[in-house]
Length: 215
Image (cartoon, rainbow, N blue to C red; front, side):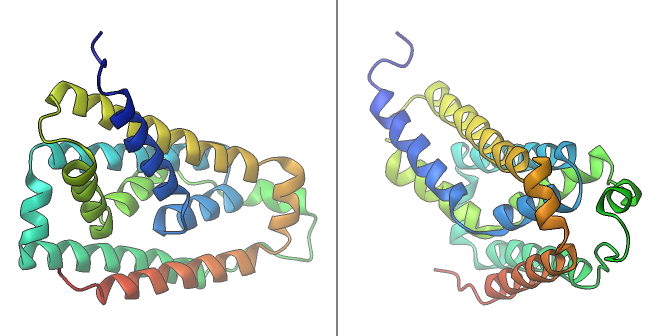
């Protein structure tokens, strides 16, 4: 059997990945905001963007580029600054958003709220994930400390695909829950504060990223 002898390792990789994406971070904050302030479609497409970002991390980890980035102060700092700038920019846009007007019916307001394009939703999810140097360090640790160096590349690719699926399913689940009409209606009444909180968190995460030291 193709995966025989690697099931325990596969389970360990998947479990660690699930715990990592469930913890608060840029992806989770962005997933919540996209789902609450736009549509289920946008939330799911953002989730797909996160998952595509995971594929990038997995690919360069398998090829050994993650180790190069982690060992190079220059490359690490380039990724750190780019990722922080992106988070701060998105956070600032959220902070300056007016949310929904409170003096109109929620249904009418929601219909007037312009949804973002599929491509933009994908791009936001993708770049939020890819430009996070902590993700680079996470996958470097995953592919060097959890996964045996002697594990065949074909099996490591299966691990990568599994991580893609886990990421997409988890954040799609978040999108489906938060876009349930009853839940979303309650949250949207506080849409301006959702923008303020998520924007503040993204800026804080961006600033924290800038302060991350190369180790």
